[in-house]
Length: 120
Image: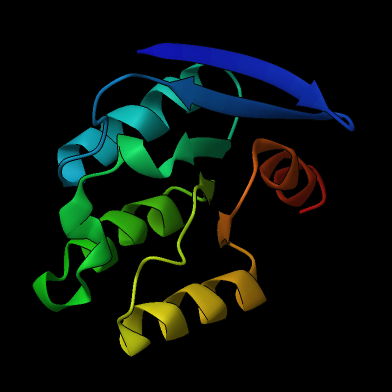
């Protein structure tokens, strides 16, 4: 896992890169939040591929449990990836509402993630 702190528009962003899944469960999410906070950032950018695929199946409640930790620790999150392959209406609604509120963002590109995280 590689963590890069990038100052974008005066805000430190924690950008995580890895070739493997970084968040499989709530404890992994807490570790990511802790690593970012230790580096001075509460704004986190992850690739969709770094989050377990189970996260995107809302029936199992993993997404809610993980995102609750981000909320509890006031950590904002941008997830970068292509979400068009998901056909679940409930997931599409969840992504829409998350993006509307802005605390958790689902975006297509790293540049879009930086813009969202840098403007909160």
